[in-house]
Image (cartoon, rainbow, N blue to C red; front, side):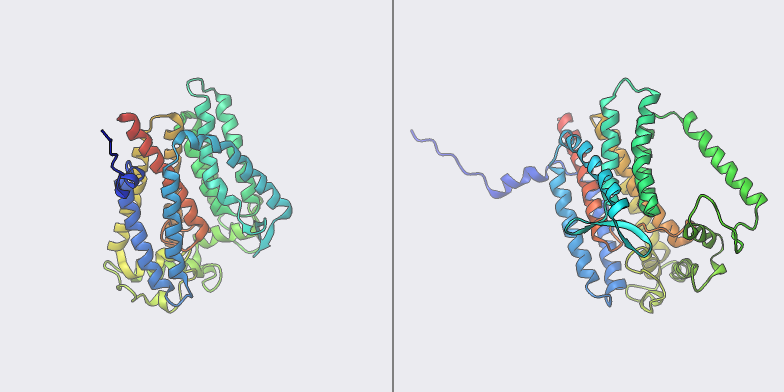
Length: 384
């Protein structure tokens, strides 16, 4: 008697690739991606092919997310050390052979022009999560000290370029891993308190910090100017303060309900600088108002909280630390960008996730989401 084996359908063969995807996380990303496409169409419709390129970058990021989600966390651990070593080596190469643009040496020509600091956004949390996973159950103060060295070495190289925005993101992700690994509050609070007291004393006894001719020893001139501009944008309203002033005008003019899609005058009359990249939040706020901002902030908060939930339910130390660090990375992206556009933080080059134009940043976001999906899938496999 012949046995006939029925060939499984295409759907049956493909479905396992999608099984285990975290649906709430996907929904949050889709909401943010939709907001990004709407805003990019409005702010960049007369800006060449920005809208089409933004959509293409999203598709690339989605493909990367899908592929990385198929890689189990145990496999991700194996690339942590090589990726970190490669990133640091490229940062050292940038210091000696880097390409300088607009006073910053951040790029390296390896056949194509790359920005190695972007690698560290992913490599840093991977490396530190790997480090503390290897020392599970036997953590000592020396282990935290080594982790700090692993963190601050590349951060110092990035600051030297200078690229304060990327340095902040790498630092935030790394500190999140060290804190979630078990660093005690009594070791965190004293340096924070000393820094705050020092700032308060300096501001109190040196009221003319931003006067002409005053130079701060620990910061470069442009960094000093950014802080002084934050404190008083009207000091140079047509120069250094122009970005912040125009951003706040656009946000305020949106009111509660916004001016409507494609109706933003500050945006379309080109008063908002970098309206498709760093300052796209101002363009969004002008057209969608306070209500739109609340929806956008809610979507980001949901994304971060969902990532933290995945971290709490992760089956291994490596997965838990990595997911927690990625959650902090998303939070840092959104908080720093919205803060600088709103005038509560200095202006630094940090894009708004899924909203701002930028291929490299979108690839980084796709990698981060893919790793979160991988951790969420591994949790379900363990539970089943």
